[in-house]
Length: 231
Image (cartoon, rainbow, N blue to C red; front, side, top):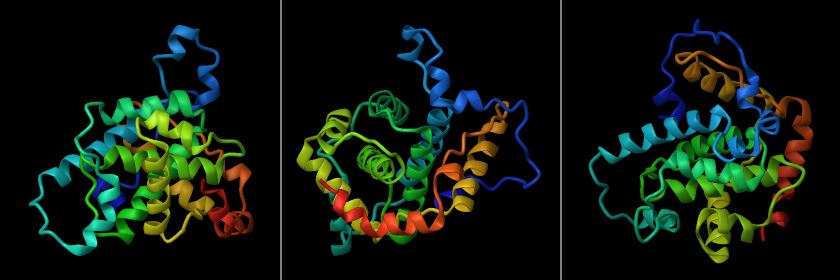
């Protein structure tokens, strides 16, 4: 069962109200005072953090898995200790310093959902969630944005070494089978799920930049050529 199946069992007729896409737009933050920019992030960051944390808490309550050889391929995502920073704080840090579009966070979440479906033995827990997040956002930024920072800079943001960042990226790609293409309709579906989640607290609409900057053919070609971008 995918993350979406677990989290979004809500009636189809729920619709956002009081639409305010500015709360999900990175451009809107530029109009805020500098002091506010340092503390405020688009609401989509908080929504994603809440959803991911719910998955983690659910997995933490499950019985421990027996040691299996195939679980070793996931060990790269587990640190020596559980980070003290919360999931929301970690995502906010990435947003502030990575300067990637808010759409990258939606695509990164889609990649994590795809990862869980392709790798059912993988459990996202407090021990590995931070590294999975930084890897997914790095990959989505390279795939989606015209400009992005290099791996060494993302490593600094994530609090890991450049070598570790490179390993995380490569392992993430291998586990996904380099399946990075996300159709416009699929992206819209993930946005709709997120909007339903937010609608319980007022309802907003996430910016859908992907719909205006990509086509099926361009994405398919970019997916094939992605390996040349890995540092």
